[in-house]
Length: 203
Image (cartoon, rainbow, N blue to C red; front, side, top):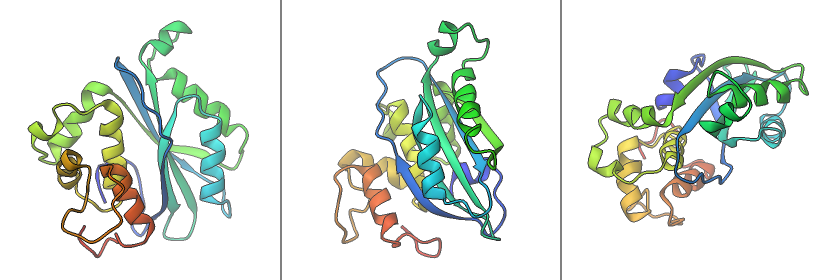
């Protein structure tokens, strides 16, 4: 299922039911990334609760939601913030603004709780691609936003190497009939939404 499914705790049989990109594009500069899995209350709707949380996060970037093998809902919230945001409020950790933002948002949903979180800076992102043997020359001019979108797109059962190669032509599936979005990440998200990219089918 990809890097994020391995890095965060998911029970066997969990499945993703939705994915989104908030369309944020940061200017150049040092950035920090916080990727957090939130367990939602039983019976809560992943679409509704993910949208609610995202609307209350100042550094909301995107995410995905799904259910466990027993149908219990969860969501993964992705945040990206300038490294200097913490300095402006006197926080010791560069991730504090994102952690605090999510803590505040979760006060509005007492049934939800944080299960796990990944905190990384922008210098570590390309290392995740290297772990999956993506050729460095494919990543030369990638922005932080593109690197994160690639990890999200990989959750749709498309290999990172295919995504990186598709970025050159802005088409994720050059050998497959589909309604191309002319943006490799949107291309993956759109085809996944048609249920054409299931775990049993190679992208």
